[in-house]
Each structure stands twice: as C-alpha cells, then as structure tokens.
Figure 1: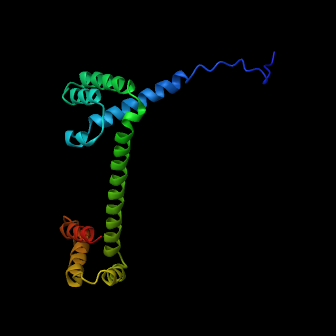
Figure 2: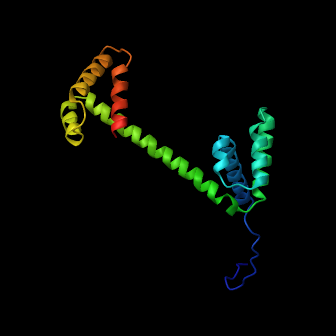
Figure 3: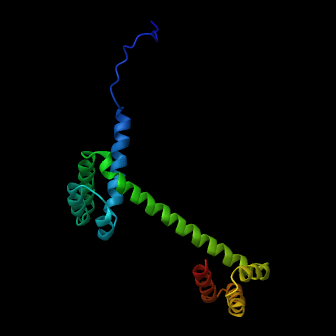
Length: 172
C-alpha cells in the first residue's frame, strides 16, 4: 500500500550511522593534525585544557600502536566537547594551509620566471624584468643566466641556477 504524503508518521531518528561515523572520522583527522603540530604552535591555539592534556600524552607516546590508541582517546575527548570549542583552532589550521599554498604558488611563479629566463626568449624576459626592477644588476644576471644554461647543457650541478632562483625569490 503506497504511503500518502499527507501523513507525517515518519519518525526522525537523527543522523544516520554513516553520518555519525563520518563525523567521528573527521574529528580523528583533526586530532591527528593537532598532534603533529609543534608544541610552540599548539600553545597559540585556543583549546580546552582536557584536550591539551591528551595532546601532550599523544605527543609523548612513541609506540605505534599505543600512539594510535592515544590518538583515538584524544578524538573521543574532543567529541565530548562542543564543536564551537575548536572553531578558532580549525580556522588557524586552515589559515596555515592557505598561507602554505600561497607560499608554494609564489615559489612556482619564481621557478617559472627562472625557466623563462633560461629559455629561448630569455633576453626579452630579462629586458622586461629589468624594466620593472631597474635596480637589478643586469650584467650579473646575464652572467648567471649564461652560466646556468651551460650547467644545464653539460649536466653539471646547478649552482648558478640556484643563485638565480635566490635572487628572483628575494626580488619577488
């Protein structure tokens, strides 16, 4: 017999078992992230005292199985607290991740610029770079680029290429 949509006999049992398990695993992942932070970084985070004590216990547990068990206990202690207690810590970790991604993107830009300088159109790229940064030593950069190309062609250690990277990183 088909159910009528007019009846509201449906009982809401709350979140499903899968949803509860997913939330528990999320807390475990967050607990692992916290346990991998250095103590100086942990001191800056706003965490409940019970969680701090458990984190200290987890961090000083060397055995793999005991560490895993301590981590699970930390997650259990964290689940006993309200989610709002960890909002600032989650935001700080997200901010750390975002700043790390920005830093990596900056290094990728420097790497791309160095590759352009070492490429076929390196002279035009160098001219544009010096036009935007007139205080650069053109002669030193040209010598570094020439040396880096030679090192690359002869499969030598990339000393000049690294120095060029450092100059560009400091510049940008």
